[in-house]
Image 1 (tube, rainbow over the protein chains, first blue to last red):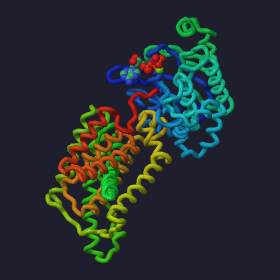
Image 2 (image 1 turned 135 degrees about the vertical axis):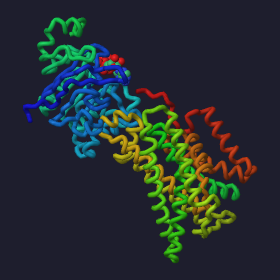
Image 3 (image 1 turned 90 degrees about the horizontal axis):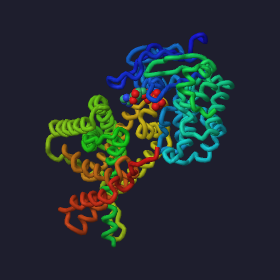
Image 4 (image 1 turned 180 degrees about the horizontal axis):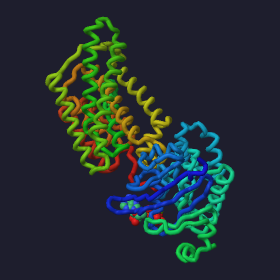
Length: 242
Length: 300
Ligand SMILES: Nc1ncnc2c1ncn2[C@@H]1O[C@H](COP(=O)(O)OP(=O)(O)OP(=O)(O)O)[C@@H](O)[C@H]1O
Ligand SMILES: [Mg+2]
């Protein structure tokens, strides 16, 4: 089992109506890895994240998670296999409190580990603790981002999908989030697959990375390899402030 | 003054019934954005189920205590309406989810006609009376309160409390609210959205059955087209209170009940529906989202 990747995406094509957003994508994520996906706007990164979760479903190809074919499974059953996602746009429940949003994250276990886990989230994001009875829709963008990540972590995922976790956050908070991801990965063996615009930080954090262009993976390698690759540098790292 | 209080009590009784029906409209609207036009007929079905159970009970168990009879009527009516509403959601509404907005609405009108015609054919087109079940009345000065009214108001209050608790404090209620607010995200968190929607239809139907049973007990008759006028009133209540809002549905129901009975008492009964709908128009002009409706702009 442990030789097999945790997540294996093969030849996946996803369509929106007649428009092909993913054009034969192959990626895999091994247990205990942090893998990032970078690419220009509209490349299909978010589509891949959502296709893994079955919404929309892939029209061709296969997605194997933890040894099981989940390609045709409904979204909620995929979630119950412990794939958690902090999706693009954060998708906080606007008329639920911060606390209730976190409870939604822990719904798979009927809140069995809730008290224990929510403390961890509050340690990770003290801001959420202060705001726990505020309605999700009234949080600031950055607070919503923290909540979205926190909510995803509440389900004790085997695989955490993060779609642009740094979006809209102050650099210091981004640093905090990336450190937190690293820590969860190193200490608890959490497997992470993330999409990032902040390619420099993502590549430094990741064991491996993929570059996506127009619905296809065009490059793959270790974070270090891609960081030093001239094409990647020119396309995604130029003007980087690091 | 006593006359006023008397009308207030009558209005609250009627309003309770409207409120119970209105919840079904508002919940279904909240969760799938559809006006379930067939909901008024669910109420009517509830009344008929209770009526039939009553006839069976009284012919087979002649000396059955009234309280027990009412309880059995209530439970069976709730089961029947739940089953029916669950079924129409599965076969008639669910396949249309994701198609254009009007499609489920038109289907719901169809379902409404199917049910009322079915009852008309099987139960006959005339009023079906039952003997008065609960006859006790209490006098306080010139004010008369019947036990029926007390039962209706009390049952409504108890149910609304339970209902409020379920929606606000239980995992099921959270799943319902999550589905209402962002269906895709709810699914990403493991919520079975289809099942949650089914349960919402069942809950709405059960409350409508309670309303139907209470209505039957209060007025002592049921007809196949009883779903229409109370259904429209309850729908109005839901819109008045702010469609999608549960407290709004109850408030709207009570308001309409009160207006009807106060208007009938002080003005002419012939214009009571005009008064109700005039109020609706008035509220919608100044607050298009209804009294407790949320404004659509939401910072997300
Ligand atoms: N619901 C949709 N309907 C139609 N087309 C869509 C839909 N969602 C995405 N697309 C299209 O699919 C393509 C890929 O979109 P996607 O959101 O996956 O890009 P992305 O790589 O995440 O971009 P960004 O970096 O801007 O978030 C885009 O061309 C987009 O316009
Ligand atoms: Mg995206």
